[in-house]
Image (cartoon, rainbow, N blue to C red; front, side, top):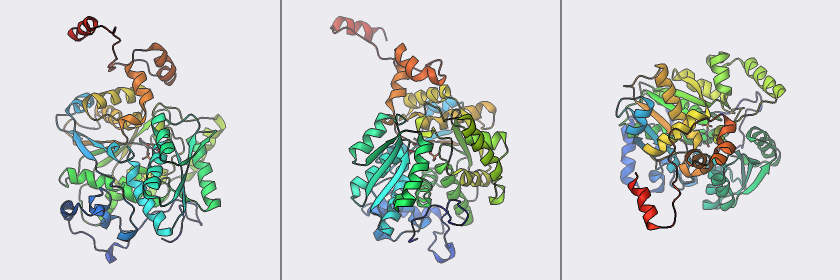
Length: 444
Ligand code: F0G
């Protein structure tokens, strides 16, 4: 606990947090957490992460760093259910974009910041496609506990996210490379300079992200859904969800587990290829590493780079691959890929029938639709799709999709294989005259 380590010095694998549950005050029922609602004047009980702290008991209360994260909702969406092909009331959206920095990352960053606080870190860093950096930057600026350096791929980050890192005062390095390059560099720099690393290679991050599962269960009156569908980039969420569910089962707090479906963007589909085409499996903790090594060697040899409009999941080397395999194994999980057309159409439907989300988040809804069409998900199943980030994070793709501007379409969408904008809600140009305005309105 006193060390700043993300991987095992002996074997190089990522570290995992294991608790000695028999020595800890474990709740007898998940219902015990309901009492925290009446103590909401205590910041630790107000936090949607820390009110579950008995299930991530690594920190003393006085070291916990919280900014009120996790006030998120499970929204029942009839419109999105219809689009996906579900029976009414069977599709729900877990909106993690309602966190302080606008993405699910705050669930993990509160936990990583807490550990950084425990070890007295002065500097923290991350590589990011934008949301991790926004989250780290907000925790650093609002608590003043440490200074922050973020590594982003040059030109690879949306303005919404870049603006957050800049505004919250993080030192922002725009690396001449993509996320996978930034990830490699930040790991090397943190190791050499003893800087606290806040990517999801940090095992404490994943402890915080477990609480997304707890909040979903809480919203469903502790009755597990049939499916949890989540976008897959670095595979932090799927890994954390799997760990949460394995632990709940082990503690006798949940008997039936939901199945996890991880959805890759087709342009960043390492997990899909390894899992569905090459048969990579958890294999009792010994996945066939040779398959992974060969896959990455070929990727480097062919110069293959991740390409998708869902920039948050434009990742070809998912750092949590192995932990995700454990999650898939424990939950009878599955993996799919969806192309950018499907992602943007799903995103437009989420916007029209819900709170909206950024492109990467809509991969979950696109994936659920695909699985419905395949007959893997039944219309009567209870499905939760995770919306990982807020609609305002990445307006470029949204505006290009909805505007009827051919130049925008050709520049932003067409190069990534998007052909139609079937659900576009285009702005209407109108002359600055009341009669013309009324003419347009009466035409609706
Ligand atoms: N959705 C959004 C909106 C994200 O920002 C990310 C990751 C993911 C999904 C994938 O996360 O697979 O680790 O659970 N964004 C990182 C970042 C890479 O730097 O913000 P997963």
